[in-house]
Length: 519
Image (cartoon, helix red, strand yellow):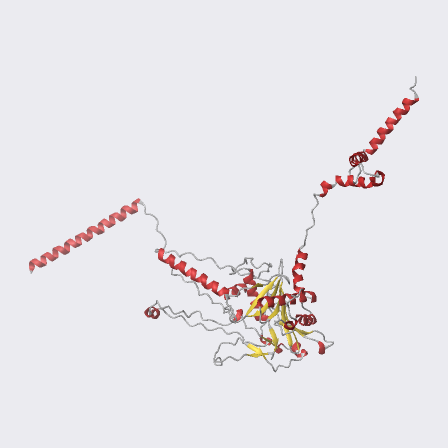
């Protein structure tokens, strides 16, 4: 018999329910969820909370159930940084645009030691160089902050030296007379400590000392003269703290001439090179600034005149001072663009010794402990010939070529309107050094990597040849050990020699006795 219709409907309903449950258990390809579990969680949430007007908030409760499943996975996402490096820099640069409330407007209208950087930037744009108006404005505010914090008498934008990680903005300031040189005091203390340590070692050490004397060290020029005439400050970005660079020594300039290194942007980085550089990147940066300034700082001829110094009329040393010529009326732009004789160097040339003024190292300081007789016995060395460089305010037409390249290139900013143009000058030996002149106004700037032009390719210095060994000879070479036969032959020869000597002594004694008997 066939089952009743009720049982068939019940079985069909169970099959449909199982099929529908299977359909509800299918997971989504996007969220990996299924409808059955979601409805189960939703009904449990409704039973637990029992909110009013469930039909109105069921959609929001469904969204909360889904969001709760993703809370654990969302915690693995990387959080965005609270402040970026650009935001920190902007926060530091914001102080440049703020004005102190207690600042008086009358003091701000007075003469400032800062030049008009905006005007300089305009003329540099005419010459095709510069840092851009926005950056020049920030640099100008940073220089203003430096002048106010350090109470500088004069300050100017020297330029910008590029680096691998960050760059250096360089400011040039005049040395203030009467200012204590902390570096010199530190060096004197270090030298005194070294002398004390050496004296203690000499007292305790009874071994023979070496007679080798190292070559004399070239003394550095005093602050405010020569390569240390100006003081330089650097910062990585406008708004960041300014750092004063140390004074430069002749040994650092001599080593910088023999190496080529890119700057990293960190002043405390050691300079790894051959020949070894005596200092870190701050000293190397200061040495390159001195070299670039000596070779590229130029001005229109007649703008400066030699300074008058009392008692130096008969002195042969080159002058290192100059002053502004009040009678200078300017040189036409076309003439300055066509002739290099219209430009002169107003920074002293650095000699091969690493100084602007030559010093005689053969002259020894007088030692009161030494006797005069010892000084007379020592042969006096030949007097070295003093080195003399080109005089101050020498024209650029006298500069020598290098690697078949002219040292300078000049042009006029616009040939269409020469009456409103400026004369621009570019250094080919120091790429990145520029100068402009317009009437009585001129300025120098350097924007580059701080490296000199090296021709087709740079060849580093070759290490010296290894020291030669001692030559072979009877006084140096050790003899081989003799054999047994050679020792026996040597012993027999010594015995024969001794017997002959004794026989000769006995014969002499007998002859003396016979002479005494005859007498």
